[in-house]
Image (cartoon, rainbow, N blue to C red):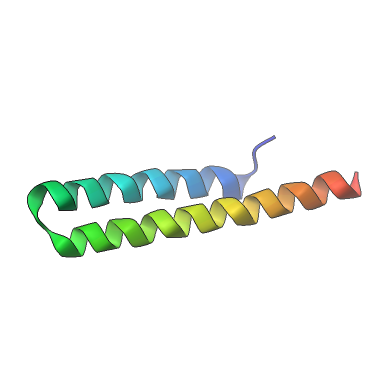
Length: 60
């Protein structure tokens, strides 16, 4: 089962990858760095979701 944090995190990760790719293609280093940061933020949020899910499974 996927929770809200996992879904939101995946969305941020994908947005970050796209923004970073556009930055690379256009030579915009700032957009690339912002995209990479958003990607990491998304991955972190997914991990939070994974931990929450594991706790719920452990409790049940």
